[in-house]
Length: 239
Image (tube, rainbow, N blue to C red):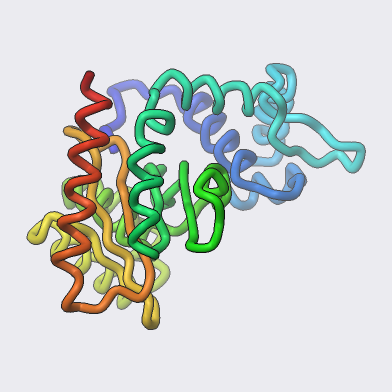
């Protein structure tokens, strides 16, 4: 996360936060709910969401709620096409499916991982596109390795709600982040499932992950396979 400029445009900041909230919702949201979740005044939220609707980035339903508008989908498609990440990475992601684990590619937005690709065994490889939306960064190896790229000062800002909500959870997350800085890969355990991830690019612009029943004795092997895939994707991205 970059530091704020000397004179940040707060309206732009609030508008982008509102846009992001609409982007991840599966159901239209009322202005009052949006205002409460984002900590904004209702009048200000109403002005912002009406401006987004005017631009086609949001639309108002008959029940006077708001959802993502067509312009947001156009913007998403244009950005994916412009970056070239998905089309260049996809052949290498498909090769990873032979490992028999979940294969994922995602980016960090504030304290959330937004998945560009999330494939599970048993599905056709193309089904990984747009299958899963977001996940809390602290609950994935991908989130941990991308959070680890930030300074402690930046992390304090990104993770402020976690620090105030649950100190023990925050301390555990920081242990995982420091371990990721030391080992070079992110790791997260949830029951019997292990997530391993590597950051892509310098500076990092995304992360690549394998998840599933990965035994401790296989971690080094799986990280090596991820490293090979990471190198292949970075090579095509740098051409």
